[in-house]
Length: 117
Image: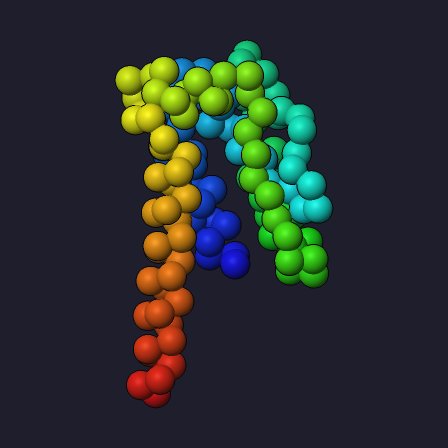
């Protein structure tokens, strides 16, 4: 699960269109329920806070098994629907697919490597 979360976080951040960085910095990880807040503002972006939340969520999810990622900037849906020329429509779904495929491949590779020992 850790690999999937880290991969997904990276994919979402790389694929999110960038102007002020606020949307990119607001992929918020939480445990139990999706986050409803935003970090910082357009004028004061805080990527470090978001990454710290991801690390905390990974550690807590190891006990509960449920982890959420959300982005509550008011225009994230517009971005995902293609309002920016920096990212295609559906970039969130693409990020999820890529992260899942990467995690599966890593797990299969590790499994094969263990089997050959």
